[in-house]
Image (cartoon, rainbow, N blue to C red; front, top):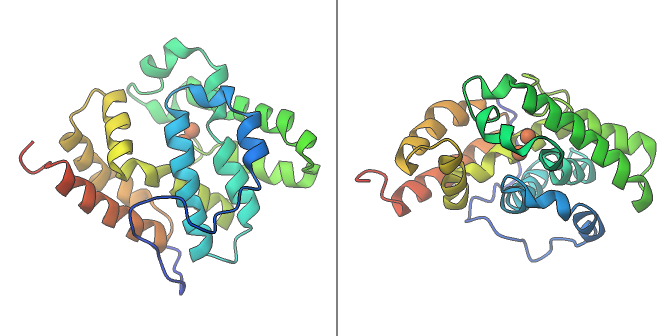
Length: 214
Ligand SMILES: [Fe+2]
Ligand SMILES: [Fe+2]
């Protein structure tokens, strides 16, 4: 069942909100090397911006847990065998490939390395790693924070930048990939806000990229 909200939903083209805080800049800096793998330095800032919008739509969620978890969730890609990212990570059964489990485990390791020095306590770090662990491979969400991270992780793909990067990973044309987004990824969204943002983004991207003719 889709998680409903009474709050307004921002479906304007994704960008940084005027009032977006910079409190996590030290954490961004701490994982800068891990952003250089697998398009993380495009995917993660974009998904982070979507996560902040989702937190506005679901104020009952702990926004700091959501923001830190989405920031760190894919850093583990930087510590796995790069050659397997394409061969296994995007091949058949990509969701359950060994490399997927490994990037989740390494992401939790990175969280435990960088967060204590930035003043986060053990209980907070565990809430973050509980979300990172299984974010791709576990079918169900365990909390509202987990759900917002899952939707933010998917939402960036509906933008032209997401379509460009992800379609190239899967060796697919943008229009083929857009059809997959509509048939496979839209139904995976957990929140009503995420579903609305994704639908508007995809309509906008399909028109812009002329997928009807290309
Ligand atoms: Fe991931
Ligand atoms: Fe991701």
